[in-house]
Amino acid sequence: MGQRIHFVVDPQGWCCMGLIIFVWLYNTIFIPKVILFPHYEEGNISVVAVLCYYFCSLFCIASLFRASVADPGKLPENPKIPITEREHWELCNKCNMMRPKRSHHCSRCGHCVRRMDHHCPWINNCVGEDNHWLFLQLCFYTQILSSYTLILDFCHYYYFLPLKKENW
Image (cartoon, rainbow, N blue to C red; front, side, top):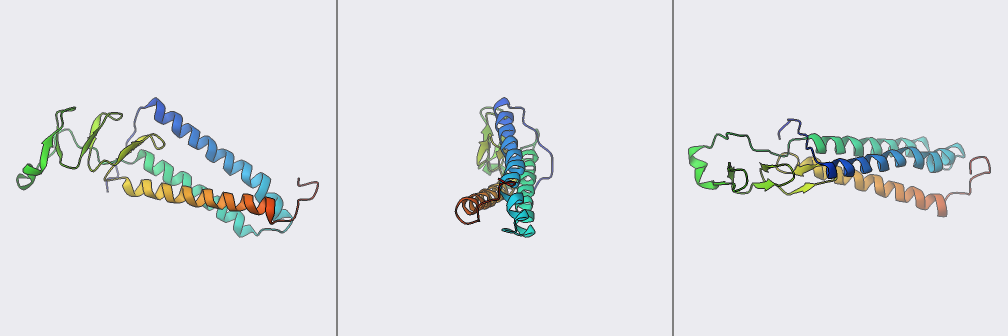
């Protein structure tokens, strides 16, 4: 997996990433203030639940950052094609570069990506051979954080005792 840092200049992608970071900050500040801390003070939940929420939140934003700046498998300008593999390469009609058979040209990024899945505006990057695992990791941590938040919301409204006046 490549460790090169990769930035895409795309206004739509930056808007999507800004929206994600806004929602993440909102949930990292608002949910603990309204649900976690008042119920922790009243003894309805333990410190482990609060720490788990913050760890999930941290893993989610870290995986977003890693997936958005990781090189998706961008082909170099002058690739060294082994003689035995020349029959598996083809010419890209958009950038006039030689590329492996399962590579695709991304119109947003302007280059060919090995085993490209799609260009994701939410991470402002292509999902390709080198960052596919990071994208799946982001999806996993986002699902964990979303499920945990929904469980906390459900418990807040239907299971926990009503908050006292000073915490309401």
